[in-house]
Image 1: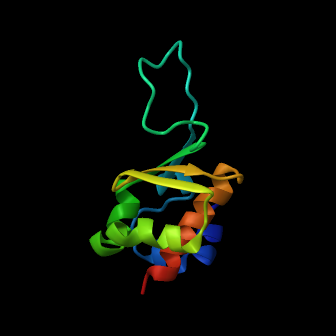
Image 2: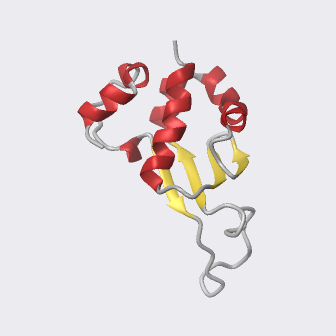
Length: 118
């Protein structure tokens, strides 16, 4: 997704970000949740069978959202029923089960944020 698309789809959010970003990864880091017993010392809180993605809200996104929205975002995501499974590990780290790819997942999360910004 390029900057023009981001501005069109998330105008309120993008107006709060001073940097000239052109990729969703500058707002959300979304990684597949994969567990490899040969590499990982212990089983993480996010069981890959329950949560197939780990989502990290970047500091840039957190600043644009503000503390109040950041604190309420998990509740809004739950209300929207955007995901099959959802777990908040920290205020900026979520485990998510979804059947969409990383780009669509980012768009869904950012759409919830966009809708809550004034």
